[in-house]
Image (cartoon, helix red, strand yellow):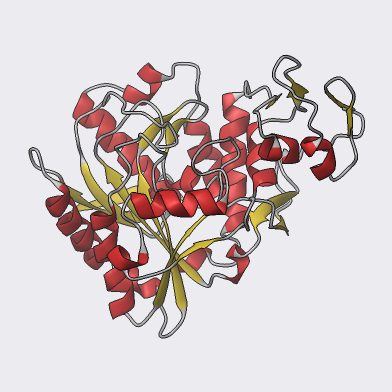
Length: 355
């Protein structure tokens, strides 16, 4: 059975105001307000853009979606988690300040910002999934309390998955730090001896006492559980991991995480995706990047795989080539769709309805 994806095409050099109008149109046509309930939280998951990035979905485009949820009787909040790597979004405090600087504050959108994984990204719950890659997934601790959600995504390329869409927005964006790390790698941390100051912070925070500090910090990989706590707390960025994970495994892991994260609310989660200003890498990159495809439009659906599949198909059709495969020839972005469908996350079959 196919899922319906609604599309409002972007014509010409449409600005923020026009994109916001189109977002409202697809929301209405797809009846995304069906996920909302009177006086109940409907959380809006989006991306505030790393410092220096200019292609995240603007707050003016998110606002009409928040307003429609409130008109449907829901209480609203923007939700996010902290990143695994260091940067402006590495912890809830700095992330909150960045979000406000980028226009996502209460004054602009009329709703609070909640961080589902605590101050440092280590508040989590293990959710059983029993799938190919993971038996359990480490979900941001407060998300299982969220009864319904709207996932607002900017379609991009991605250094590991080839494509970053709604699946990645859920899988990476609503997992804890440990969950993010599990999806990225199966390795253990290494210490850059030239950078390490032997301050002992990593050893203090290590949950397994797997780090000894002498002239520099030393990790006992026999005791290490790969949780990433040392990576998070190191004040001088002396901790590193190997990020060279097999692309298919990474994509399948994302699909399994998305399935586990949405386990309690899959039927009450809706999706809006902006397929414009499509860049080679995701909005986690703190820089302006070259666009790799023409603007397509704004899409809406109740199915995360269908909306990603449609957004990719439409983008490649507009460009006359597979821009994601061209940008990342060694990445198997199709694996997240195929495996996601196999585990019940959604379907690749979609019916496109243009507005």
